[in-house]
Every structure is written in structure tokens, then in C-alpha cells.
Amino acid sequence: MLEKPKIIHLVLDVLKPHQPPLPEFASFVGELPGLTRVDISVVEMDEKTESLRIIVDGSSIDFEELKAHMARQGAVIHSVDKVIVE
Image (cartoon, rainbow, N blue to C red; front, side, top):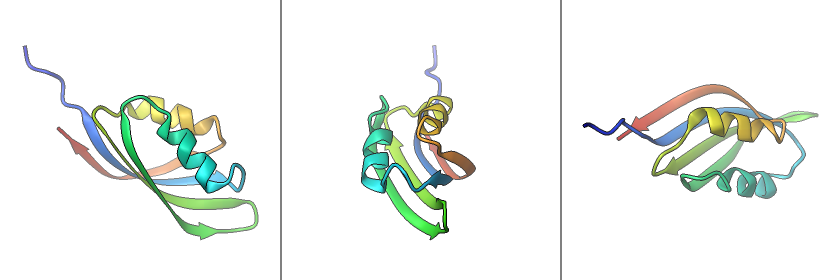
């Protein structure tokens, strides 16, 4: 029986409020099972929100779980800009 392909790399465009601060948010995202690396850059900042480019790597990334996890901190995925499946 063949194993189902797994997402191992995602590049996301995400909007989040200023709180929590970026280091805290990155650590929170990194708590998700299956992730091995979280790389976050601020692309744009306005009065209330930050636009982020988030790159996550892992052995098996559950996209829906990741989306729900980030939503707990008020973050919303605007787009998925790159996916690598193995």
C-alpha cells in the first residue's frame, strides 16, 4: 500500500494583529506537531495589523490544523504561495 504524500514545505501570506509580538507568535506556530522549522518575515505593517511571509518546514504538515492553530492568535492565511509535497 502506498503512503499518502505529505506536505513538507509551505510558504504562506498571513495577516495578524500586532499582538502577540512576532517572536511569541513564531514560537506558538512552532509548537504544532510535525513542524521542524518556522521562518517569519514582516512584509508590511499598518496601524493594527502585520502582513507576514511565513515559511514552515516539517515531516508532515497538516494544513487545516496549521490554519486553525494560527487563528487562535488572530492570524488569517491570505494565500498559499508555495507547497512542496513528498
